[in-house]
Amino acid sequence: MSDSQSKILLVDDEVDILEFISYNLEKEGYKVYTAQNGAEAIKVAEKTLPDLIILDVMMPEMDGIAACEEIRRIPSLQHTMIAFLTARGEDYSQIAGFEAGADDYITKPIRPKVLISRVKALLKRTTAIGLLPAAVVDTGHTIVIGNLVIDKERYLILKDGVEMVLPRKEFELLSLLVSKPGKVFTREEIYYSVWGDNVVVGDRTIDVHIRKLREKIGNEQIKTLKGIGYKFVD
Image (cartoon, rainbow, N blue to C red; front, side):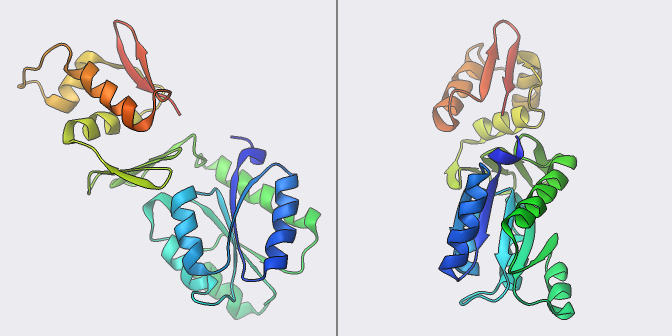
C-alpha cells in the first residue's frame, strides 16, 4: 500500500482544525476519517483500522491521553501509529503522551507542508516494520490482515469492524489460510490441520467450507488452485 492510499483518523474537538487538516491530507490522496473526542475516536478506529491516528490531547468527554491508552489495549490497533497534535508544548504533556503509547508529538499551529512531511515519515516507519494492512499481525490471540481481524480466543471474526461468528471448522480453516497469505495449502495440509488425521471426511468437505467462507468474507480473497488447494490473498 502506498502512502497516498493510507487511512488516517484525525481527532480534534475544533471543527475548523478538522476541516483544515482534512483538506490538506485528502489533497495528498489520503483517506481521512474524523472524530471530535476520544470516545468517538475509539469507535471510529475500531471500525476503520487506520494506519495513522492524529490525536489532540485536550478534548471533552475523553482526552487524547486516555484515548491513546484505550486504543493501545485493542489488539487490532496495537500497531497503528499515533501522533499527538496539540497546542500544548510542555515537557510533562509530551512525556504523558509517550507513556500512553504515542509514536510522535506534533505541536500546532503547524504549516501544511510540515504536517504532510511528518505524516509521510510516520507512515514510512509503519511500512519499514511491515505493519501496513498487506502484512499479517499475529499477537498470538489475534490475527490482523487487511480488513479482517480474527480473534482466536473468542472465535470471532471482524470484517470492516463488523463482528461475525463462524462455525468452528470454518473459523479454523480461515485462520489457517490467513496465517500465511499467498501460500498454497494443499488439500492434504488442510485436512490434517483442520480435521486431523484420525477423522475421515468426504472429498467435498473442504469445498463446502470454502464456499461458505467466500459467502461471508467475499470471493476475492480465497483463491482456488485447481487440483492443488487454496490460498488467501489480501
